[in-house]
Length: 130
Image (cartoon, rainbow, N blue to C red; front, side, top):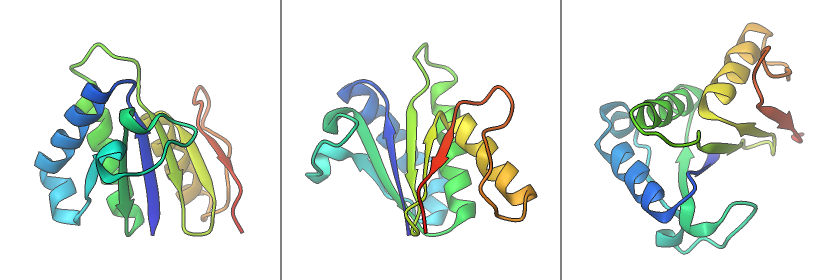
């Protein structure tokens, strides 16, 4: 399983994104359950607990669907891009905007699954893992 933490900058933003994801047909079809971290009792980590949405994802297709939904949620809002932190089952961590993490995942797929640097202009980082 892959854990995803999305920091949106405010408790209201986290509640808005979690509601958006619950209504998103792709997220619903894949069984993605997203909630503001404070609502699920998760402790604060590197990102504040009340401005974070957490989700657990079962496969790479669902992860991409979640990231696309996050990017779609942000488009009509005049906000800074949410920071997405993806912790994969092997401990590998991807961190950046939804768009940057999508770029890393696509580049990784094109590279046969091997770790990659963020595509040119992207800011996502990949580290750790087994």
